[in-house]
Figure 1 (cartoon, rainbow, N blue to C red):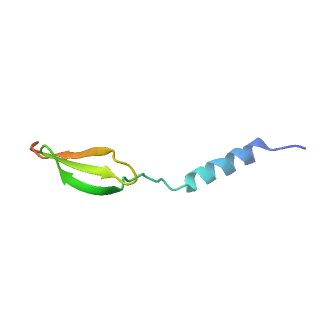
Figure 2: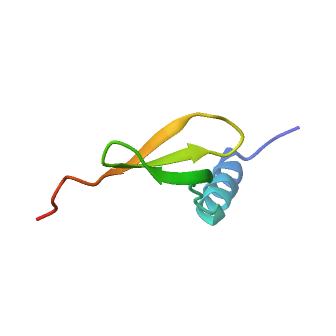
Figure 3: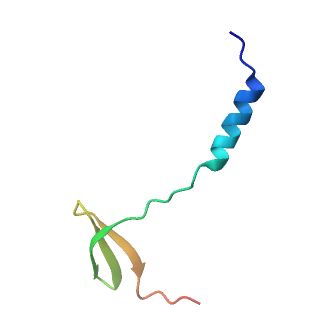
Length: 59
């Protein structure tokens, strides 16, 4: 059996170009303020994530 590697490479490049890029977005059960910070509690766990510090001033 003979395989033309150029055809294989071309098909692989075309399939990779068609892939959609995805981004994971965290889902929060609760969002609240704690110690001047926006804090989100992740769905399915009790892990807390600091979303934004409120006392920082953006220029």
